[in-house]
Amino acid sequence: MTQTELKTKSDVTSRNGVNIIKVSSTSRSTAVAGAIAGVIREYGHAEVQAIGASAVNQAVKAIAIARGYLAEDGYDISCVPTFTEVEINGQERTAVRFRVDAHRRSV
Image 1 (cartoon, rainbow, N blue to C red):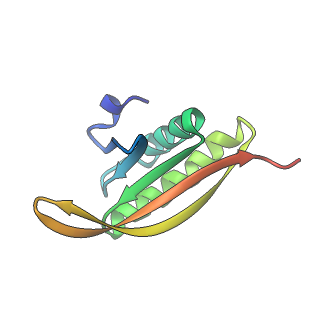
Image 2 (cartoon, one colour):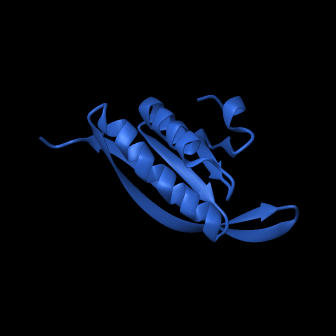
């Protein structure tokens, strides 16, 4: 998936060379999962960011779906959630950011 394909439901931005997949409450979890899997295949890890309970729900579902996509390639993932402050329209908001790392599945 490319950044353009995600514009309507989620957004991919770059921060210090790291792609951040931004998820909203209306994001399609399968589209976000594809983006997560694609970024992980390319970079070995991804960062997923969501603001609000519904967006966090969509992000968690997308991470679970991405795990299935990556299992087909012999990878498993681990996920570390953190809180971060972001500025939106001049207001500070608290976001949940998930660091998703890939590693080879054990046999």
